[in-house]
Length: 231
Image (cartoon, rainbow, N blue to C red; front, top):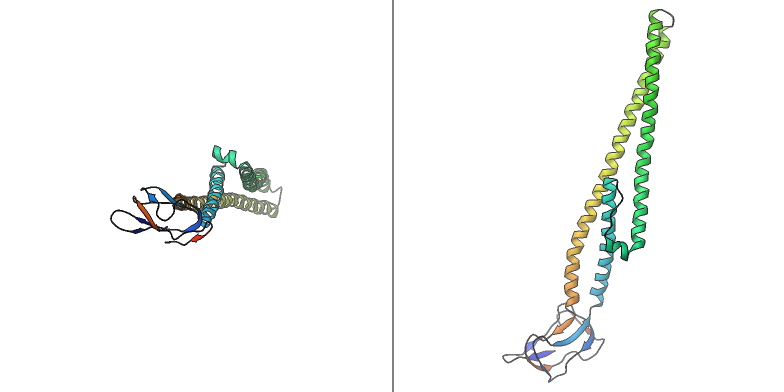
């Protein structure tokens, strides 16, 4: 519409546009600065805002879970999220359990191998000492003794491999978790800024008179009509 202030005619436009929900004035009406003229329904902005909020909730839950995984401690979720989204939190807890149990199982498997081979090595070293004494007294043959030394080297290789596997599993797990955590935090911070911008757009659904004056001409006449951006 158009407001006639004391100095000049001013055309009122809306930055984003939207669907006309209510019209509060007619041509010739006297309006004061700040009076409501039109209320718009920003369907696209509202939809985007809703989707953004859902993504932020999921990201917040993921961040809590990943922080728990990085410390191997139960995740701590925000109280409000636990109250409003119990199902999402429960799914997140289950995922935490699955991922940490898989990690712990992999570590446990290698530690069992390490323990068994270390025990075997201790027994074999006793056999080697006995064999060495027997060999000095010529009560056993050199080939038998060499076979024991060969077996010792094989067991030591298995121990070294188990230690290497434990190190690799830990590095891979924590690198993966921390990488995902940083990515989720980065996206969360970015979307928080976008949410502020969208919220500002939603707050601009009410078109108000910028000046005291008289409505000279109304360009919007239909409830449900579309006001384009800049109109």
